[in-house]
Image (cartoon, rainbow, N blue to C red; front, top):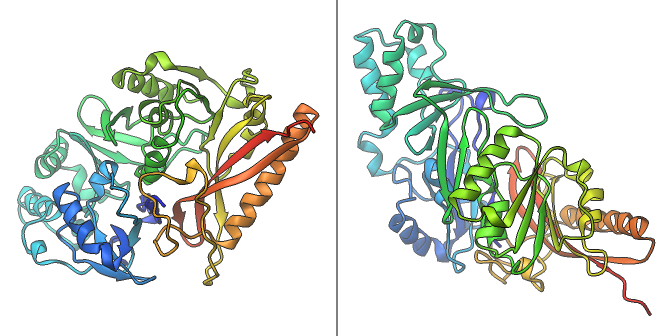
Length: 429
């Protein structure tokens, strides 16, 4: 199974001060026998975080720390199944940590700027981690909130940029409750918030002050990029800036994608990204509420990438599927998972959806585990979608669970899953 993100980076109020809890460190967990090969690959790609040592994690696996700002570049060969986790316990510093890390360089230059006015309050107010988008550094919302910083004016942000090797500085706020997950990001240094990301050879572009970018979806983007979509027409009901629309077009070989999105800023970002990747002629953007989509009977595949639930899009997905041949739905959902250890079921490997570059067909790999509650959710969803199709078309339909993908988890016990569901009209007897 592809590397499944087991925790997204805490942000905002969810991130506690360093004196209260250790800073979460992203790491790739894999079987002990594969750890050395994975380490060599990460070193070659300059993804290994040398500040921290390898650590043992539950399940008899080894976790290799990776650089958070380079998560979007993560692309592993098929013989290296792994899981992306956030190490919550105290990290073990490596010998390399004795060298001056960027976070330490930032503190040193700020101390010089304040000329002896350093305090414990200021120390705790300086971030240890941040997101990098090209020449723009995005700080967490709890950074530089102490009153003394305000007196420094623009020189503060110029110093931060210099220490971190950036030209632009922005600070995130809370996500706005507007149904579009619009970020509340303030640009502190620079003229605009437009940035570019490259994932798996695909160029994404967006304005950090208007749109969000989630590195936690990288494993699912890698997976859909390898699906057999040649010649297919696809509908992406929640396209955003193109998280999945672009992999389907650039790598999976979809003939045409109908991308639905109601956020005007995401629409502009997607339009620019389509042009950057030279696939604008194979995609039509439907700006508006996907529930009002007027397409019918034309899709071989539908992507429903909305969490915590894409259920409102199920009727639309059923309507756009080809009525004579059906197709495949990729249904995203957050599923609660009990904390107690439970038996695991083998993932299904018989379909193309389950055979993508980062999977292993054995059941001992980190990702190749399907928990019973996940299977129950998938089967319940399959039954409900089947009912929608029968009601819509007035004749029998069959649904079949092809694959269940664990994308990431949210503390304490909620998993973001994707169900690949095959939907076909019953053949006349």
